[in-house]
Length: 515
Image (cartoon, rainbow, N blue to C red; front, side):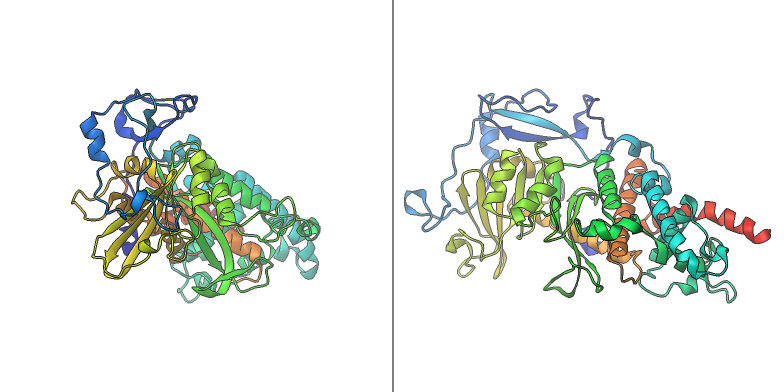
């Protein structure tokens, strides 16, 4: 995982955040984004610092990146919508150019006061989520009771026991016991078990709760599924994602990508990709690039019933996923699947920038930009179309990188980019993309490393396990931001968090054993 971590730009560059209502004068806590607007337009409703006028020499130096443009007569590239001549940009020394101040990534609201690992997790798996699970699990238990001779074998559960159940899943994940038999963790006689686990509940109770765990009313789930395929877990799913957005202010750079959670059971919306033909449940993730915090998440449920029948056209997905940050001058890093001129135009209209890789087979890409023969290492071609720019960069021999971006804000996003101070032959926008393109892959890798998932035939459980994994990662991010001096790694954090969840139920369980 360390190799992937190095691709993330300043993973823990933590600063004190501010409330949207409270602005201070310390410019160290803000990023500047240069926005070009029509003088006739009304100024955007954002906090801003006074306009900073650059000298003409300074402005010129910022835009003199050495790119080899394709030389075509009249400035047009043959059989293409692209032009070798960049459109005129507004003069930043006039009122059309202004520097917008943005607060850096940080916790919001109650997240600022969350100190312990369990408090950080409870921001996302909050009391309402636990109460909903407890209520519907008890409804399922009431149905199962008739199969047990002794009432105590099928007794109702409560919020404390549900939290302890989640704690056992997390602690099993820390020893990388996911999808394996969990019996050995409960082994007390041979001494091979984990004391914190078998002193919390017995193996039979754990398996009983796993079988009865419910996220919706079992009596109505079947009817609701006819109108919404995601009905059995929608309430929990939407609540947790809302909490993701509620307690974190994203930074300037975010990445959009896909995550596939393995699942081989029966499910109408199980999908597969070439890299993983066995299939699973696919999600779209929007992740902060400075801190691996998942800001938005969407489970792919094709051909659902109205009003939940969403379009999964790449442009529509990109617009839905970035909706929480649109109009806030963010820059979205996208994979080739989502990058297109149409997406760039729509995001640009909502004051959002895009940097994304495109494949050689992408429509309207000039042939010169897809050919590596005769080009040397670090050779770069560039072209323009309205608010978009196209860059073809030779990374090494026969290794070509083609990027499409919102060209006007290109320098503002890259000039202030933090990272190595050493000069690089790559254009700054290429450096920025290379540093941030693996953030979604990093989240998937982190989920896999300490996975809480168990083998199950219920797709609802797989969705919930994935929500637990991502909630734990987000909780770790909040904890590290609130404790910048802490060196607690993620495994230690998950262990401490799990023990805090187990402790109340362990006290109850021990008292019952002594009676």
